[in-house]
Length: 435
Image 1 (tube, rainbow, N blue to C red):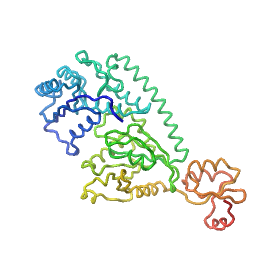
Image 2: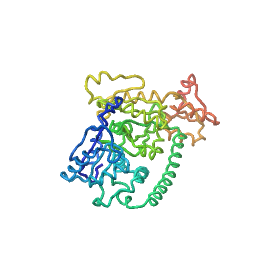
Image 3: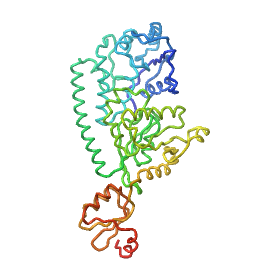
């Protein structure tokens, strides 16, 4: 997956001297550079410093603005990106002073999402977030800027939207919301069908670039795009797999999280993230080779709380164990809800599968079921759901060795012609089996 446009950019981060977030050990500037780099941009100049107070007009002091303005001319930069959320007036004033386009953190992340979206729903959700962000910036003084064809911050709705008025923007937002509501209703029906189909739902969550998609591919035999980059996966992907111990499992790969994820994105993707709330189990994938893995782990749980998915059982998957320092690897514990793996190298995957099976098999019946042969529909359904492990025939009945949930089993037993075969009778019946 490649971006088709590469901007020449200057990047800026300026923090208040008196404000230090001790709870966040991540170097925001390095993560910021990674975000910019993931767009394919060419970083010409970096400004990373501190200031005593924020300017309501420019965010930065006038002296620093003048310095960046000179650098913009010197390096012929066509974009200046701030690792801060700027007000519409600050963005507009900076563009006038710098004589080039300005993008804030939210605009940058929205652009990355726009470049990653592949499904129809994903593209609509990103466009909705971009338009909501854009609607507050329609008064931009774009007449002083050279018109450009694409680039960072212009994917998705792009420049053409900037030339429209508020009424057209509002109509477009209304249209997208209406189409998304229709899609969301269909997704609800799909989620209902999953439950009715007696599928276990397992979702992979984690900070961006933790290795979720690599693990997803290993567990499902899929070939989803995976790369060492931020937000390589944007659209929610579902794959069905059969487990000998649990029946059918639907694996869901989700977009990676990041600290200070724009509110507009959380709102736009809320319906997609509802898939997480329907999960029976979360695999929380953490990159243990990352020095900031503990903080990122907490950030993911924070977002799960925001979308009311924090009450779902988790298996903590310590990924990239092969890349972790030896001292760190020794300190990583394993228990019933935690396992260390390397998805890329296939290390620890069998232990992970065992933990998944152990969790999902709670409330599972493993034994023999007798079904009258006239009930062919039940037989077909049991095979479709992956519950039957072996089939035999005796007289006018099928005998199935099954692995099935107790709830589903009780529903079957309410029908005439479906019975459990007691353990003490199974050996006697085995002598008379056909098949």
